[in-house]
Amino acid sequence: MRHFKRGRKLNRTSSHRSALLSNLAATFVINKHIVTTEPKAKELRSFAERLVTYAKKNSLHGRRLILKNIKGRNSKKIADILIHDLAPNYTDRNGGYTRIIKLDNRKNDNAKICIIEFVNLKNTDSEDSSEEKQEKTE
Image (cartoon, rainbow, N blue to C red; front, side):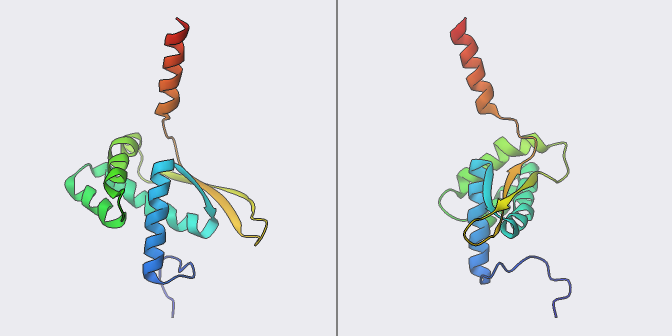
């Protein structure tokens, strides 16, 4: 029986599921948003929020927990992005770092599609470009 079993199987084996979540989380941290199906987004939400909570600790143990969950060549880069770029934005927030925005269904298989993104993210790229524009005009 399925009493109190958490998480979705997503029609995959456990190793495939963990690889999928690791890859989705890596892309999500780099791009700050992802367009995916609704069940994958809901699973990714809990996975990514746990990573941000580890990053907020700003300790060696937190970094190792992130590296344990994110696999691949870019894992150290992603850990640095989480710890130095994302975690400082959420120091006063206890959870709820992501939001899911539902879109129309996919045309070919009618799957529910949504965007998952980080909440209250300070966009440093646009601030830098606006400062450069002001310097050029002066």
